[in-house]
Length: 191
Image (tube, rainbow, N blue to C red; front, side):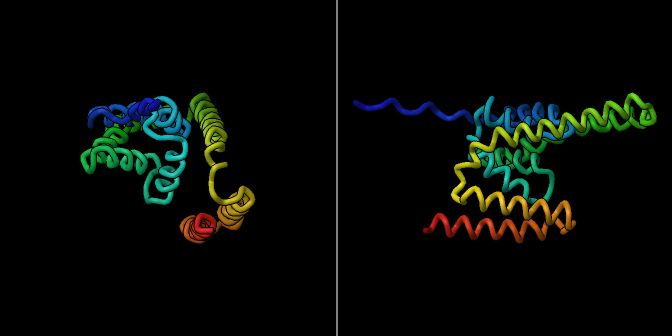
């Protein structure tokens, strides 16, 4: 008895699909887009598995520029090459750029209003909560990392101390602790 082939994996259907998808994603990402990106690309569209999302997000974070823009270009490039990367980038930037310029003009008129200042502080708190929720959702995929949890926790704590408390430059911490993590993972996989 033969088993049925697995369902074909969802993927962007065209450059237009990429552009529209990333435009809609960018328009939802005010104040922090990690939670929105994870929900859209992993849970709703299923273009990435949770493990792929974590790996791609890690690469996007160490590249120069905004994380989600890097991720969009990686996904666009994966499916449609350079044209896909450019379509995804245009989707992330075109419409949101116009909206940001309009909002900047409006904010300049009402920046001193206490209601506007309070609303912005409230939005920042919501963004922090969304990022924390996305981190909790992704923790299951992190448990499959080849490095033991204690090593991962030690590297994470060292990174927090070096950046938040000792004020080391982020690039030095990324190179140092990221390099250490790569070496430890490689040795663990090779053993």
